[in-house]
Image (cartoon, rainbow, N blue to C red; front, side, top):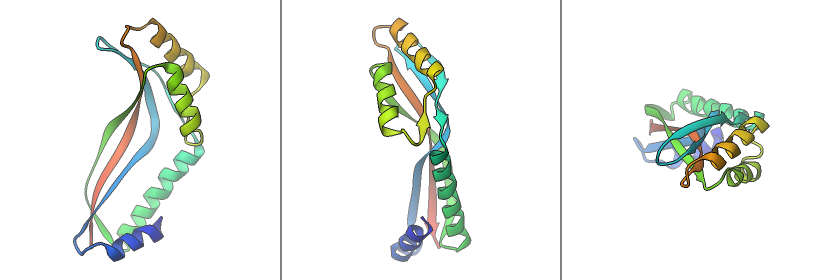
Length: 139
């Protein structure tokens, strides 16, 4: 990743802006929600590959800053919700799309299914992802 940041620095105009936008592993909450209420039913399990990816990205940005390529101007976190109509839709998505990055333990799976089945007619399931956004200026 440091090589890619070096290439970005090479082609980015002086005082240009780089936006670092990415999810961070943080045992994201699993929620069942409706117009009436929101219930946290569990948390995802952060898997080693996802944690390693976060650490590698952080190291790369630190190295780019040390190299003088970019200066951190502003950084914040915000939630991004992935939403599914049913608990089983959520499980399938996580198992298929995020299989090496996060997991769901059996207790969270059961709790989500149960809360969704007993919820209001408009109940849906979501995972609240922790997002990082950082503004960097090229040096």
